[in-house]
Length: 277
Image 1 (tube, rainbow, N blue to C red):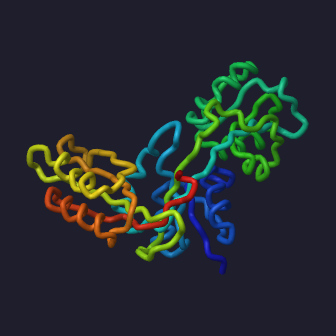
Image 2: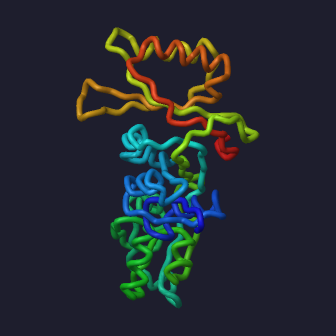
Image 3: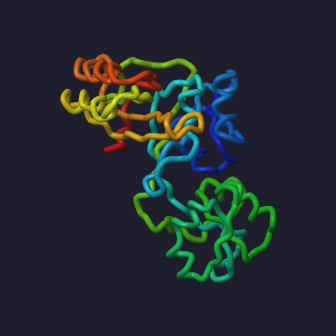
Protein backbone atom coordinates (compact mmCIF):
# COMPACT_ATOMS: atom_id res chain seq x y z
CA UNK A 1 0.00 0.00 0.00
CA UNK A 2 1.28 3.45 -0.93
CA UNK A 3 2.10 5.79 1.92
CA UNK A 4 -0.13 8.85 1.93
CA UNK A 5 -0.08 12.50 2.93
CA UNK A 6 -3.38 14.14 3.86
CA UNK A 7 -4.44 17.67 2.94
CA UNK A 8 -7.57 19.79 3.29
CA UNK A 9 -9.39 20.54 0.06
CA UNK A 10 -10.19 19.01 -3.28
CA UNK A 11 -7.66 17.66 -5.78
CA UNK A 12 -5.90 20.62 -7.35
CA UNK A 13 -5.92 22.78 -4.21
CA UNK A 14 -2.73 24.65 -3.32
CA UNK A 15 -2.32 22.25 -0.38
CA UNK A 16 -2.36 19.43 -2.95
CA UNK A 17 0.35 21.28 -4.87
CA UNK A 18 2.38 21.55 -1.65
CA UNK A 19 2.12 17.78 -1.16
CA UNK A 20 3.28 17.03 -4.70
CA UNK A 21 6.19 19.49 -4.55
CA UNK A 22 7.42 18.43 -1.11
CA UNK A 23 6.63 14.69 -1.01
CA UNK A 24 6.20 13.50 -4.62
CA UNK A 25 6.73 9.90 -3.52
CA UNK A 26 3.60 9.95 -1.31
CA UNK A 27 0.00 9.56 -2.47
CA UNK A 28 -1.96 12.74 -1.73
CA UNK A 29 -5.18 12.16 0.24
CA UNK A 30 -7.83 14.92 -0.06
CA UNK A 31 -9.87 15.60 3.10
CA UNK A 32 -12.98 17.73 3.63
CA UNK A 33 -11.72 19.67 6.66
CA UNK A 34 -8.50 20.35 8.57
CA UNK A 35 -9.87 18.14 11.34
CA UNK A 36 -10.33 15.29 8.85
CA UNK A 37 -6.73 15.66 7.61
CA UNK A 38 -5.45 15.53 11.19
CA UNK A 39 -7.65 12.53 11.99
CA UNK A 40 -6.36 10.68 8.90
CA UNK A 41 -2.84 10.78 10.35
CA UNK A 42 -3.91 10.09 13.91
CA UNK A 43 -5.94 7.04 12.76
CA UNK A 44 -3.20 5.68 10.52
CA UNK A 45 -4.88 6.38 7.16
CA UNK A 46 -1.99 8.68 6.23
CA UNK A 47 1.61 9.05 7.37
CA UNK A 48 1.67 12.86 7.23
CA UNK A 49 -0.61 15.89 7.00
CA UNK A 50 0.17 19.08 5.05
CA UNK A 51 -1.47 22.03 6.84
CA UNK A 52 -1.28 25.71 5.78
CA UNK A 53 -0.58 28.06 8.69
CA UNK A 54 0.04 31.47 7.12
CA UNK A 55 0.09 33.37 3.86
CA UNK A 56 2.41 36.27 3.05
CA UNK A 57 -0.52 38.36 1.82
CA UNK A 58 -3.41 37.38 4.09
CA UNK A 59 -1.71 36.37 7.35
CA UNK A 60 -2.49 33.32 9.44
CA UNK A 61 -4.96 30.65 8.40
CA UNK A 62 -8.02 30.69 10.65
CA UNK A 63 -8.51 27.76 13.05
CA UNK A 64 -5.12 26.10 12.49
CA UNK A 65 -3.48 27.55 15.61
CA UNK A 66 -6.43 26.30 17.67
CA UNK A 67 -6.23 22.82 16.14
CA UNK A 68 -2.48 22.16 16.40
CA UNK A 69 -2.13 21.92 20.22
CA UNK A 70 -5.08 19.53 20.48
CA UNK A 71 -4.24 17.47 17.40
CA UNK A 72 -2.00 14.94 19.11
CA UNK A 73 0.39 15.32 16.15
CA UNK A 74 3.87 16.79 15.89
CA UNK A 75 5.50 19.18 13.41
CA UNK A 76 8.36 17.46 11.57
CA UNK A 77 8.90 19.87 8.65
CA UNK A 78 7.84 23.13 7.08
CA UNK A 79 7.32 24.00 3.41
CA UNK A 80 6.94 27.29 1.58
CA UNK A 81 4.87 27.18 -1.61
CA UNK A 82 4.59 30.00 -4.12
CA UNK A 83 0.91 30.68 -4.83
CA UNK A 84 0.72 31.35 -8.57
CA UNK A 85 -2.85 32.02 -9.66
CA UNK A 86 -4.19 30.94 -13.06
CA UNK A 87 -7.37 31.93 -14.89
CA UNK A 88 -8.93 28.64 -16.00
CA UNK A 89 -11.71 28.17 -18.57
CA UNK A 90 -13.28 25.50 -20.76
CA UNK A 91 -11.12 24.31 -23.68
CA UNK A 92 -11.27 26.69 -26.62
CA UNK A 93 -12.61 29.67 -24.68
CA UNK A 94 -10.87 33.01 -25.31
CA UNK A 95 -10.07 35.54 -22.59
CA UNK A 96 -12.43 38.12 -24.11
CA UNK A 97 -15.33 35.65 -23.75
CA UNK A 98 -14.94 35.37 -19.96
CA UNK A 99 -17.52 37.39 -17.99
CA UNK A 100 -17.06 36.00 -14.48
CA UNK A 101 -14.43 34.20 -12.43
CA UNK A 102 -15.13 31.97 -9.42
CA UNK A 103 -12.75 31.25 -6.56
CA UNK A 104 -12.19 31.46 -2.82
CA UNK A 105 -12.61 35.03 -1.61
CA UNK A 106 -8.89 35.26 -0.74
CA UNK A 107 -7.85 34.59 -4.33
CA UNK A 108 -10.49 36.92 -5.74
CA UNK A 109 -9.04 39.73 -3.67
CA UNK A 110 -5.50 38.87 -4.76
CA UNK A 111 -6.33 39.24 -8.49
CA UNK A 112 -8.36 42.43 -8.25
CA UNK A 113 -6.28 44.45 -10.74
CA UNK A 114 -6.34 41.76 -13.46
CA UNK A 115 -10.08 41.16 -13.12
CA UNK A 116 -10.92 44.84 -13.24
CA UNK A 117 -8.69 45.39 -16.26
CA UNK A 118 -10.56 42.69 -18.19
CA UNK A 119 -14.02 43.52 -16.86
CA UNK A 120 -14.43 40.12 -15.20
CA UNK A 121 -17.05 39.83 -12.44
CA UNK A 122 -16.01 38.09 -9.21
CA UNK A 123 -18.02 35.10 -7.94
CA UNK A 124 -17.26 33.63 -4.52
CA UNK A 125 -16.76 29.88 -4.39
CA UNK A 126 -16.11 27.53 -1.46
CA UNK A 127 -12.49 26.95 -2.44
CA UNK A 128 -10.10 27.20 -5.38
CA UNK A 129 -10.07 23.64 -6.70
CA UNK A 130 -13.80 23.26 -6.09
CA UNK A 131 -14.38 26.35 -8.21
CA UNK A 132 -12.35 24.81 -11.04
CA UNK A 133 -14.39 21.62 -10.80
CA UNK A 134 -17.63 23.66 -10.85
CA UNK A 135 -16.55 25.53 -14.00
CA UNK A 136 -15.73 22.22 -15.71
CA UNK A 137 -19.09 20.69 -14.75
CA UNK A 138 -21.20 23.79 -15.48
CA UNK A 139 -19.85 23.95 -19.05
CA UNK A 140 -20.62 27.66 -19.40
CA UNK A 141 -17.96 29.29 -21.61
CA UNK A 142 -18.43 32.73 -20.04
CA UNK A 143 -17.47 31.41 -16.59
CA UNK A 144 -13.85 30.88 -15.48
CA UNK A 145 -12.09 29.91 -12.26
CA UNK A 146 -9.09 31.25 -10.37
CA UNK A 147 -6.99 28.33 -9.14
CA UNK A 148 -3.70 26.53 -9.62
CA UNK A 149 -2.50 25.25 -12.97
CA UNK A 150 -2.64 21.81 -11.31
CA UNK A 151 -6.41 22.22 -10.91
CA UNK A 152 -6.65 23.04 -14.62
CA UNK A 153 -4.86 19.79 -15.47
CA UNK A 154 -7.07 17.73 -13.16
CA UNK A 155 -10.40 19.14 -14.37
CA UNK A 156 -9.53 19.55 -18.06
CA UNK A 157 -9.49 23.34 -18.20
CA UNK A 158 -7.29 25.64 -20.28
CA UNK A 159 -4.99 28.21 -18.67
CA UNK A 160 -5.96 31.58 -20.19
CA UNK A 161 -3.58 33.59 -18.02
CA UNK A 162 -1.03 32.66 -15.36
CA UNK A 163 0.68 34.55 -12.55
CA UNK A 164 -2.10 37.15 -12.42
CA UNK A 165 -1.90 37.83 -8.66
CA UNK A 166 -1.39 41.44 -7.55
CA UNK A 167 1.41 40.49 -5.15
CA UNK A 168 4.19 38.77 -7.05
CA UNK A 169 5.68 37.14 -3.94
CA UNK A 170 2.46 35.56 -2.62
CA UNK A 171 3.63 32.52 -0.63
CA UNK A 172 1.95 30.10 1.79
CA UNK A 173 3.79 28.42 4.64
CA UNK A 174 2.77 24.85 5.46
CA UNK A 175 3.56 22.64 8.45
CA UNK A 176 4.01 18.91 7.99
CA UNK A 177 2.50 16.89 10.85
CA UNK A 178 3.22 13.30 11.93
CA UNK A 179 2.16 10.95 14.73
CA UNK A 180 5.63 10.83 16.29
CA UNK A 181 8.00 13.74 16.98
CA UNK A 182 11.46 13.90 15.43
CA UNK A 183 14.04 15.80 17.50
CA UNK A 184 17.03 14.77 15.37
CA UNK A 185 19.16 17.54 13.90
CA UNK A 186 18.73 17.54 10.12
CA UNK A 187 18.81 19.86 7.14
CA UNK A 188 21.46 22.43 6.25
CA UNK A 189 19.66 25.65 7.21
CA UNK A 190 19.38 25.26 10.97
CA UNK A 191 16.53 24.04 13.15
CA UNK A 192 13.20 25.57 14.16
CA UNK A 193 11.21 24.96 17.35
CA UNK A 194 7.49 25.69 17.63
CA UNK A 195 5.63 25.79 20.94
CA UNK A 196 2.54 27.19 22.63
CA UNK A 197 2.37 28.60 26.16
CA UNK A 198 0.12 30.39 28.60
CA UNK A 199 1.61 33.04 30.90
CA UNK A 200 0.94 33.14 34.63
CA UNK A 201 -1.43 35.79 35.93
CA UNK A 202 1.24 38.20 37.18
CA UNK A 203 2.07 41.77 36.08
CA UNK A 204 4.16 42.04 32.89
CA UNK A 205 4.32 38.25 32.64
CA UNK A 206 4.65 38.20 28.83
CA UNK A 207 7.35 40.87 28.85
CA UNK A 208 9.32 38.94 31.46
CA UNK A 209 8.77 35.62 29.69
CA UNK A 210 10.16 37.00 26.44
CA UNK A 211 13.23 38.47 28.14
CA UNK A 212 15.04 35.14 28.19
CA UNK A 213 14.99 34.90 24.41
CA UNK A 214 16.41 38.41 24.00
CA UNK A 215 19.19 37.98 26.57
CA UNK A 216 20.19 34.62 25.11
CA UNK A 217 20.24 35.88 21.52
CA UNK A 218 17.40 33.64 20.29
CA UNK A 219 15.58 34.87 17.19
CA UNK A 220 11.80 34.55 17.61
CA UNK A 221 10.35 34.58 14.10
CA UNK A 222 6.70 34.45 15.14
CA UNK A 223 4.65 35.27 18.23
CA UNK A 224 0.87 35.26 18.04
CA UNK A 225 -1.86 35.26 20.65
CA UNK A 226 -5.36 33.85 20.56
CA UNK A 227 -8.14 33.16 23.01
CA UNK A 228 -8.78 29.69 24.36
CA UNK A 229 -12.06 28.32 25.61
CA UNK A 230 -13.99 31.36 24.38
CA UNK A 231 -12.65 33.50 27.20
CA UNK A 232 -11.19 36.99 26.86
CA UNK A 233 -8.97 36.36 29.89
CA UNK A 234 -7.53 33.00 28.79
CA UNK A 235 -4.85 33.76 26.21
CA UNK A 236 -2.52 31.26 24.60
CA UNK A 237 0.59 32.23 22.67
CA UNK A 238 2.05 30.48 19.65
CA UNK A 239 5.77 30.95 18.93
CA UNK A 240 8.42 29.92 16.40
CA UNK A 241 12.08 30.29 17.30
CA UNK A 242 15.31 29.52 15.50
CA UNK A 243 17.28 26.77 17.19
CA UNK A 244 16.95 23.35 18.84
CA UNK A 245 15.79 22.82 22.46
CA UNK A 246 19.15 21.16 23.19
CA UNK A 247 21.10 24.27 22.15
CA UNK A 248 22.42 25.79 25.42
CA UNK A 249 21.05 29.26 24.65
CA UNK A 250 17.61 27.87 23.68
CA UNK A 251 17.53 25.67 26.78
CA UNK A 252 18.25 28.68 29.01
CA UNK A 253 15.55 30.74 27.31
CA UNK A 254 12.98 27.95 27.66
CA UNK A 255 13.88 27.53 31.33
CA UNK A 256 13.25 31.22 31.93
CA UNK A 257 10.00 31.03 29.97
CA UNK A 258 8.87 28.12 32.15
CA UNK A 259 9.18 30.26 35.28
CA UNK A 260 6.64 32.80 34.00
CA UNK A 261 4.18 30.39 32.35
CA UNK A 262 1.53 27.98 33.54
CA UNK A 263 1.91 25.66 30.56
CA UNK A 264 4.39 25.08 27.71
CA UNK A 265 3.87 22.53 24.93
CA UNK A 266 6.47 21.95 22.22
CA UNK A 267 4.60 21.23 18.98
CA UNK A 268 7.63 20.29 16.93
CA UNK A 269 11.34 20.56 16.21
CA UNK A 270 12.16 20.58 12.50
CA UNK A 271 14.65 21.81 9.90
CA UNK A 272 14.19 25.33 8.54
CA UNK A 273 13.05 25.34 4.93
CA UNK A 274 15.71 27.06 2.77
CA UNK A 275 12.92 29.10 1.14
CA UNK A 276 12.28 30.78 4.50
CA UNK A 277 15.23 33.15 3.89
